[in-house]
Image (cartoon, rainbow, N blue to C red; front, side):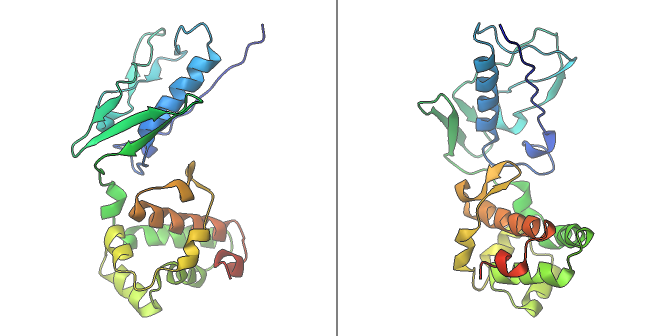
Amino acid sequence: MKKALLVIDLQNDYFPGGKFPLWNTDAVLDNIEQAITTARPDSQGPQCHHAACWRREASLNSATRCADVAVSDRLQPHQGVHPTATGAISSRRDRSGWRGSSMQKATKHRIFTTSVASVYPLYVAKAERKGRTKDEVDAVIRWLTGYSQLELESQLREKKDFETFFREAPKPNPARALIKGLVCGVRVEDIVDPTMREIRYLDKLADELAKGKALDKILRT
């Protein structure tokens, strides 16, 4: 029998309570559990080979934590519905056994209330490290939202949060629907929440800029 080492490195920051929480992390955890179960056909469950192990928690707000547990400790079984402060996640499995989740009542992500001005310097720094310019970052944002340069600078100066920034966007570009691909392991085109999708559109454009893609291609012209 052939043997393989399955290593799954979860990044704490992308789960609830982290710096950059993503949507649908409950389904991610369930798919990881399914992958481990598939890799262990004897159904003995995953085993930890380190003192720290990721465990499933009942609450979405503590969906993952690094706990000191025994080597043979297992992931707690999926309970179907996880209560949250404002709603619940209902789960389903498709025919392949992999699971998706639908948000019955959305939990607002911390990024929604984060000011664009606090993240904007990171977009610029990322671009400049790769030989791009602040003007190109601004051009990408103007193209996405319809803000003029003066309006963009006003939004930054007033420290508007991401939710407000995109809600007040004067003319969101219809061509932004052509933005596709992965951001932080999530397909932009599959994101359901409209505000989160706009944020990830911006992230994707910033990634393309940093990767050296020509500006006219980034702007889908």
